[in-house]
Image (cartoon, rainbow, N blue to C red; front, side, top):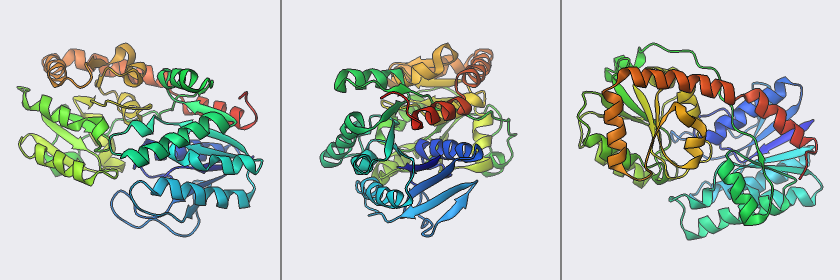
Length: 373
């Protein structure tokens, strides 16, 4: 089968959950013998470096960079149209769109007679970083996916319910997978920041308003603990907000702004954290949460359905948007290392039992082949 994937920034990078998901699906499908092409956005990556401009191969997957208007609010839309035109020339059997914004281009593929599948990673039009026009464009992509796509994939029951009530459309629930994690001893993080096993609380994700890192900083300021707080992640069209968070972090000497991390540094941060915190107001199925669980982290999340559905009883939930509730939960965990360790072990077992990439690939290929609309 010839498969095209559209919507990611750079396949194989860790700029966001979509990039991780696309890389896992694409490389595993290629290993099964399918011909997979990912059409990536042009422009710059999370570190400001220019992305490739010529096609190349990544773990058996053909990567084709496409022209992009690399301007906030326009990159996903313009690259999706460019990618769709490029994909149609390659005559794929199916085009798989990832995220709502890129789905604006989905009707082009449908009119050309190509089967289309859309994965809604989250209700992106609700994200605080988008203004009115961008939000309306993204929601238009959501409507295109709901009305036109041959198959619709969502990552959580709450979003599945949303499409059923909003559009009368049945979506297929295909949760993300996660790879089994091997513990990484503290080495690089000790040399760089003086961090040791269990000595810090970890936030790892994009520094964007809906993830509420400022709420975590507020809760941590009121926490009587010798542990440090590590805020790891880069901005995503939110440089001004990132600088606000950096300014807030500078008020507490216990806080480390680690920036964007990947590779061994990332593995060490997950492996040695006392607990991981995700204070989001809005999520799809957060990959960083799955990865933290796979590393055996005790996880603390807001009580939004998309997070609670993932952690179940193997984590701790606080009231969304409530810094005092978050502070109290962190204080209780910091005073009870045995509970924290037990929850981390339970989280690892839960995610390994429930979140399989092999299952996600199998279900997705079934939809490529003509699963019910």
